[in-house]
Image (cartoon, rainbow, N blue to C red; front, side):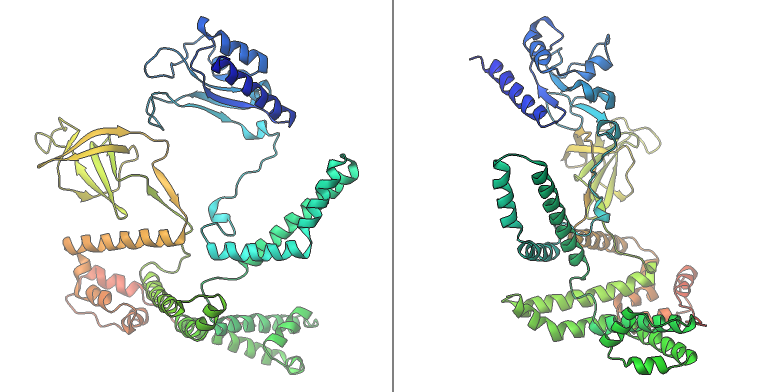
Length: 502
């Protein structure tokens, strides 16, 4: 049989099977013929038989449709679809040659109005920053699977599914459909239960027990104070909190409102003191408990793992102090974007950029003199400066280094210049590389970072010097730059004022 005819017959069977399952068909193919021409009768016959439409042709009827093959004049590539989907097509067309992909064919694209296509029923994936956890977090994935398998065993899902399959072999009934839907809902509930159970615990030993207990105590005394202020009984949940805090509820009930308010203030002050020593508490708690935890998890090399964890914990504490000192309190990054390549080109500025450890090195095009427009924007000087690249930058596929210049030989405009990084370890590595690159640049370029006071802060980070900056007691030499003096004084913390609980 003709292989081409055999292909069309196989496609016809696949399309019929999909439609039997209530799917709407979209067929994307390199057909190697143009159905609008005389030699495209075979493709035309196939389209008529399976009732597929060509929205690109219908949208631009009467116009000359762009050839999709670099070495020909015919259109060979198609996105065909059911007639019911034509109303949801918002845009359809072709990209330029080598745009978005390296090929001798151009890319054909279609944009659907998803609400129109799916009658308003959407199942859009949750954005990464909004997800409870991702597959890169192996510890949470293990916890999720453990909890879910416990639920599956508790509810006997495996056996129930096998029995239900056997029943369906006898025939489909309304009762079986209800049983199937009930089982499906129970499995979904177990999955949600496992997900919620997983995210309740902060992995990585983030808090010491004393910090958690201090925060728990504040919540307890605030609840008791609210109950006494409104003259209502103390809630049962608060009484259970008293049991965990080893407090006698008879003693708590006997306290007057002023006494309860005083105990609340003391609890808040205790929490503040623990928070100030949170990093030290975390290290101490890790040292005391990690050995037993590691043995329970079957870790053989627990000593080196513990030493690594302690180093990371201490390093985070130092970085946290520096971050608060220089940029104030803020939450950690959920994701960052980095370029997909190393070399890039801007036609507007006639520059090439090299991405190196979080920064862009900018190389200017050669020109007859500094005031003239570059006469050869594919040849560039070898010296560079750091710069934010222009918005129109494209990927430079090949940059050749010669003795006295850099030569740009090819560029490529992909659909995406940046890629998203959401793995916390990779984010941290990228940021550390960027910071290291900036510091090396600062060593080369003399500036305010070489001031005596700033150098002292760099050499003594994580020590009492940082506390002197925050308290405003640091000694600043008279010759210090006035901008640096203002910067240091701006980081002086104000007096802590206790909030009234009246």
